[in-house]
Length: 147
Image (cartoon, helix red, strand yellow):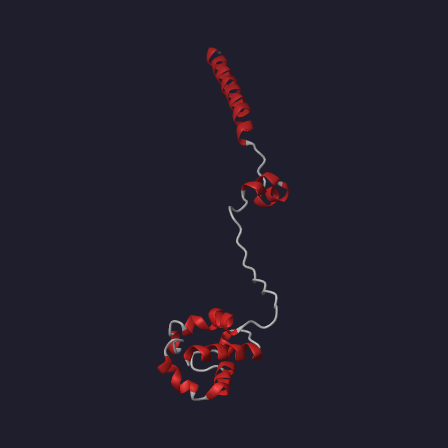
């Protein structure tokens, strides 16, 4: 009978230790886990933590207000000079009178037609939105420089 009492005590001791361990471990491991979708619904704190460091937006630049036709020198320096000052894409340089000689043979109307329709690598109207008066002003400016 002594063995029987000893095994009952051992059994109750094991059950007691197990109960104590469960009482300690269960609260540490039984946390309510929410899914990421549930957490994102109402968590303002997480929204603040995951904000990007910087924002980058591409926006179309507003066109400057048209204040009437620009003069030939202004248009040449902003549109035409990129190629005609450097000779890029075979454009005759503004200070190369020999390169302009055959073009001057076309006359002013021929040059206006070349600028309006484009020639070689030059797109029509130099790739800009130019009025007929502005094109005439640019041609007059170029003629004054190459003659």
